Image (cartoon, rainbow, N blue to C red):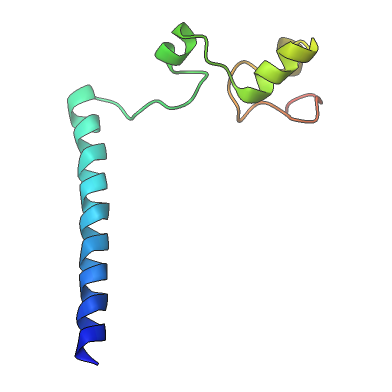
Amino acid sequence: MTASISTILVVVLVSIGFVGFFFLGMSLTQIFKGHDIDSEISTNKDMQRLGIKCAVQESREDTGTDCDDIGCHGNCSSCDVDHSVAK
């Protein structure tokens, strides 16, 4: 019975360590860069420079649908898969 408790304790402590390490890494990015990590396609200048686009926007461009008419500007959260007007 004690082996199970010690195993559970090790797993919990290792999990807490991983979460703490992740939190520290995110905090250091915030401290040294002065902002959060920008992973949104529409606002990340490096992704725009590399020509990375939202998957929905790319598929619409491939099919000839004009993304600007429906409000899709590279921001996946504003894209609407049904080709209807974005709200």
